[in-house]
Image (cartoon, rainbow, N blue to C red; front, side, top):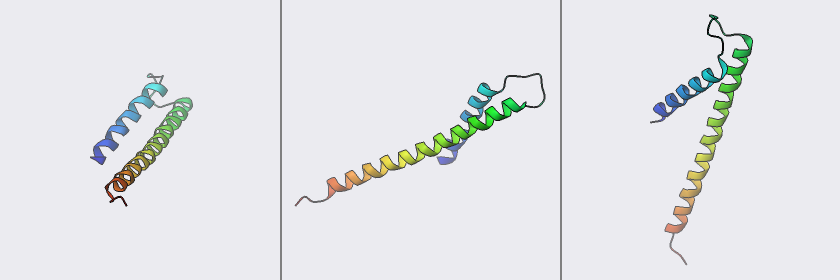
Length: 75
């Protein structure tokens, strides 16, 4: 499942960054402004994905801890 999620994220990042950054369709190569925009856009996606992964891990950890506490016999 993780491979599909990574692939989906890559496609989404490519689509969003392309739509946001590429403006000139007559040139064969990206200009400096487009390259800079794509670099920043992809970095932002990577950071967002990293933060989201960490946050989901924390939420899952907290939920598991809560469940374990509820299952322990009460004194």
